[in-house]
Length: 222
Image 1 (spheres, one colour):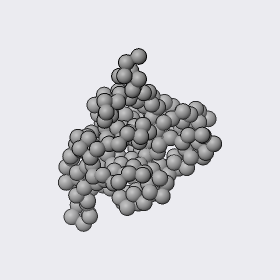
Image 2: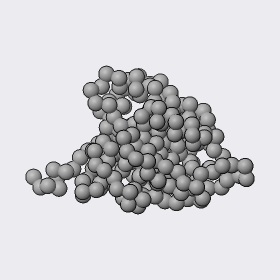
Image 3: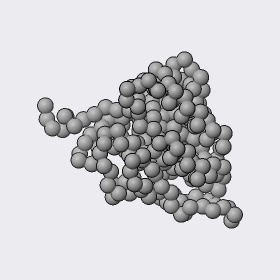
Image 4: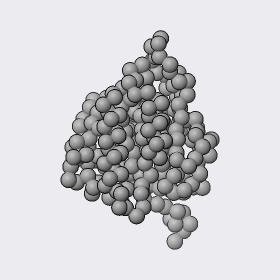
């Protein structure tokens, strides 16, 4: 067997969160580099797949499970989560209820996996940062919760593509225990222009955070 094939891995990544948080749009942007502005509710489960290359020319194929928002109450949810290497919990920064839903998802995930021998890597993703002027969930609220829950922390826009690939690459690197150099992270950044009202304190730069690693600047909000 060649060294190349020895390095190949298949990982399962589950993407979940409340309906209309942009989960499917995030998956579509990552897997197919497309965006559909019309909302289509995911019923049950959808699948996406994409191969990525990590530093060291390590090839990883990601099998992405897009879980419908209503599935949190489904008897199938434990089966959707079973064997996950990483779980990405998405919410809409313009919707406070969506963030509360992300909390519920995180609690449900941890409850269902509490007896697992190996816990998946967890990430909290604030989506729709292109709508910064409509933000309802403060960055401090997001960041504090991610730290408390030992979750990776990201902000993204499925519409513009800002930091979408970054989320999946950085979470994969965490699972594989492969360091991601800053230069490699910066290549994944897609700067966006977000509207801001006069009374908003809009940060010039956002950050991603992976538990156990130094904070790394990853996206611009101008």
